[in-house]
Structure formats: C-alpha cells, structure tokens
Amino acid sequence: MWGAIKVGAAVLGTVALTMGGLAVTGAAAQPDEEGPVGAVMRELQPLVEDGTLSEAQAEAVADRLGRWIRIRLFREGTEELRRHLTRLAAEVAEILAIPPSELAAQLEDGATLAELAEAGGSSGGRLISDVVDHLSAHLAVAVTSGRLEQSAADRMLASVEETLVSIVDVEHPFRRVIDQRRERAARLEGLAAAAEVMGMSVGDVRAELAEGISLAEVAEGRGVEADRLIEAILTPFREHLERAVARGRLTEERAAELLSGAAERVTEAIERVPGG
Image (cartoon, rainbow, N blue to C red):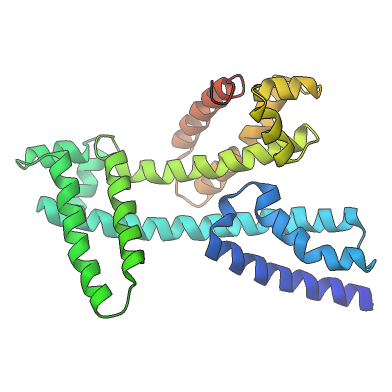
C-alpha cells in the first residue's frame, strides 16, 4: 500500500513539475530523451533507486505520462499560437484598411497578403514594415508602463516579422503557420519514433547521422526496412492530424493532403545524408 501511495504521489508531482518546467523552457517540442519522457524518468529515478519501481516499470510510466504531457502541451501551445495569429490578422486588417471578416474571406479564397497589399497600392514588404511598426508602438507603451520587459518586446517583434516574411507570399498564410507547427512537432516525435523502432536512443541516432550516413542506412544496419521506418516516423504526424480533424480544426481532405505531402518529404529525407 505504501509503495502505491509513493508511486501515486510521485506521478502527481512529476506531472506538475514536468508540465511547469517544459511549458517554461519550451522543451515540449524536444524529442523523447530531451523532452517529457526524459523529464518524467528523471523525476521517477529516486523510486527506481529505492526499489519502489523497477527500471522497466519507470520506463512504462514515463512513456505513458510523457506522451500525455506532450499532447497536452502541444494543444495548449497551438491554442496560444491561434490567439497570437488572430491578433496579428487584426493588425494586418487594420493596416490594409479592410474589416477582419473581409480579410479572412479573401485569404480563404486564395489571395495572399502581398496581393491584398498591392491591391491597396502598397506591397508585401511595406505591409510587413507597417505591421511591425504598428505593433512596436503598442509594445512600447507596455514597456514604458512596466507591463513588459524590453527584451520580451524585442523577441515578439522579431517573431512577428519572421512569421510575416515566411507567409506574406503564400496562400492561406495563417493556416500555413499552424500546419508548420504540426509538422515540426511531428518531425521531432518522428525522430524519437524512428529511434524506438530501431532499438536506439535519439542521441545514438544523431551520433550515427553525424558520421555522414542517412537515416535509411542507420535503419538498414539495424535490420529495419525503409517502409517500417517511414511508417514509424509518420505515425506521430498522422495522430496530430487525426486529433485536429476530431476537434474540427481540419477537414479530412486537408488532413489527407498534409499527410501525403509529409510522406513524400519523409521518404526523401531518410535517404538524405545530413549536411550533404
């Protein structure tokens, strides 16, 4: 009974500490050995050392909790990103002098931000400058009032400018940012999944790649076929898409398009030699 109580208390404490720590550091986006699973394992290590849990039991708990924590943090981060993008879209609409609803409708119809700016006698580059200047004035007020540190304001401005530069000439720009976040998270999880299917740690996989060989070659050396490796890498992304569809964030058709594109990129990536 005492052992069960210790494990239960440790699990609750681990979730709280890991969620808090990863949310602050952004480590939720890291692969398993550096992210939630590794963090949970560190917190459970004292129970392994005193014999309350075996190493295998701790790994099973860490895997289950780590996965739950990763999903939870990803969802929270995505919702926060959506809020930021909504505010950014409002800034863009104000600069373009059109209602936010009209901006959304034109972007949904396939117009790019650069095209909308040009239609109003401006340009994509000018739109980016105007949005950054407009946001800078708002942030300056927050800094002056003590509600925001200058370093944080600088990071926000740099992030907004980087985001706008990457999306100003593409269709469905704000949707693209969300899609890119899903793909980045899934790529990191995919590396951990690839390591697992090959019976390796993420660190060991990276070390092999650093020797100038492809991921497919690493897998071949471990007796893992390319198709199995690709499926392991794609599984986290597929699960992200399924959750997005279930929550009404994506249509099934859009999810299928994203998965198909990811499959093509993964198939090419596993044959590529890092730095080659």
